[in-house]
Image 1 (tube, rainbow, N blue to C red):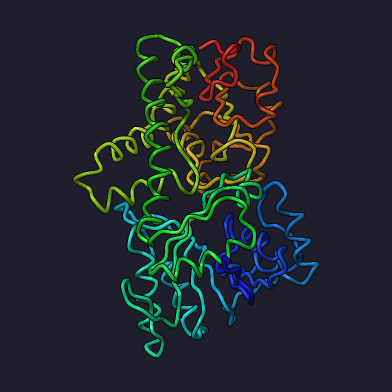
Image 2 (image 1 turned 180 degrees about the horizontal axis):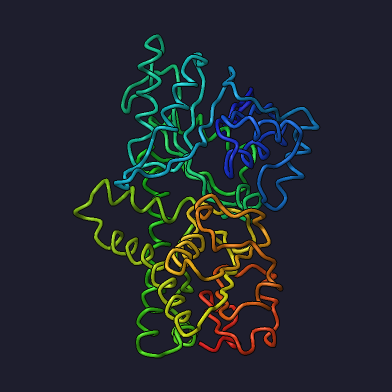
Length: 423
């Protein structure tokens, strides 16, 4: 019979992955300690509150805290198992910044005792899980760390990447299949015992490097397909063809399923993870690199189109609808909408730009240096604007009536107003 974890669990990182994972486990009767460097996050979780918007998460956090199963702290505690769920951004040269993972590993090391499990959930380049074991081993020479092909270890180290979609995290964290890759088969089995507590999908055991690569490949696959749609949009625009109609017709083929173009690619995974593959094998990942370049350039193209439209007016007002990286969430990480707005504001410093987003209540830090930006409600912004740019298809934006857009230049980057746009 497959083993199921029993004991106390610590999760380092109470963000978009760490906190939902903590809730999923705590509500299965396991004591979970959430660790975060941000005292405000720790205070919010301790009160049973959620520091960001995610459907169904607030109820789970309040319930887990009320049950006494979920607590939060800034200090790494002793535990029977540790999950690392910290950010893995990229450096200026687009290689992975593993400083957060290393710091978490070094925080865990003094607390470890024989038989403990360490799981890296943070999306990472192949070989990172092995580095976690090395970093811990350097601080704890008294503990035997796992080595492939060797029998016997004191600490079990594995990688289990998250595979969830913001806006559906609490559903997918339970229903999706999980890939668990160990530095040894026993490490994979031990780590899987944690995910058996809540995962209803199949748990797939493999080696750590394959698990790391699988997650990167999932996001690179999405990126390449989005780049194809975005490149089709550029080509169709040049040929004065409606790209949405072209995609609609092409997708009637039984073996074709083209994604929708947009103003770029955002979020914490897709714009970042493919670069980890490229940096690992730069001479071979040519298609993946090109896709990244296509999608990275997309915000610049959108901004250039808006600036060109603005030149037709003496003193235009521009409404930019949307700041988050996708619809109906408050997550602005790597948001192409923010980049588009910044590029327009920089190119048109004397033009009033009204920025709208029902999930964002302050101008994001990346845009704080532009004096011509003002946060405004969507209805007022659309009413005042000469040019309306739809960057994120939030439900309230999609419900804006056709008649309210009449007489305005409309640039719909998402196709949500396709029958209304006059561009």
